[in-house]
Amino acid sequence: DIQLTQSPSFLSASVGDRVTITCRASQDISSYLAWYQQEPGKAPKLLIYAVSTLQSEVPSRFSGSGSGTEFTLTISSLQPEDFATYYCQQLNSYPLTFGPGTKVDVK
Amino acid sequence: EVQLVESGGGLVQPGGSLRLSCAASGFTFSTYAMNWVRQVPGKGLEWVSYITSSGNTIYYADSVEGRFTISRDNAKNSLYLQMNSLRDEDTAVYYCARKKYSSGYDYWGQGTLVTVSS
Image (cartoon, rainbow over all chains, first blue to last red; front, side):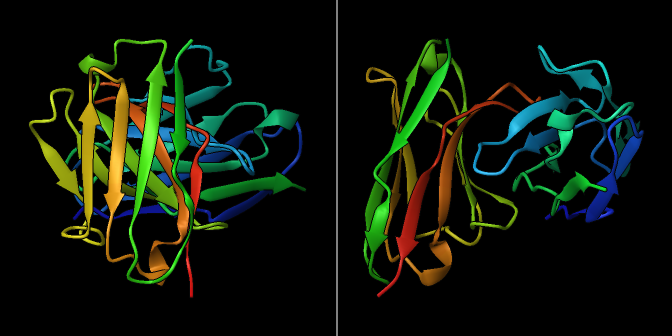
């Protein structure tokens, strides 16, 4: 099975900050990586797929990059609605694993 | 508007069974692969099972293989998860999610809570 790790696990930031979250895969997953945002008590929301393609209606302050085994999610200017937990997911092979999550909290 | 609505969760004793349903609307259900994903309250996401649009190919997580069965009825626009031999560790919110080709899960239901406890 492909394992995903995320760093950091927890991040304190302020509105307007640039935030970067890293996701590492235990083996090459090509470009089969997605990012999700989850607010407390809500279902996850797809933000980015295929490493860097923004899902419809996702603000352009979100961006993704990487390939192979290392990927990043960047929020260029953190907004109040962005305080949430972020998960990466590999779609290269079953089981389709998720990373453990990165919680972005108010500094 | 795409909607996925789960139902069937509840409290069940260890060793018991439960059947979850996911009612889909707002899209052509028969053309999309579907998934079940679960989340222990306060913890991360765990993929549970996958079924292709036709139902011909199915995958399960090792943790549920042999105990859970995914199925779908395209005529009823519905996805199901039959859960048998339930364990304490199956306690979680269960989400159904639509798979956007190889691009991720673009629509999720609101989730249904399954609690396994004596």
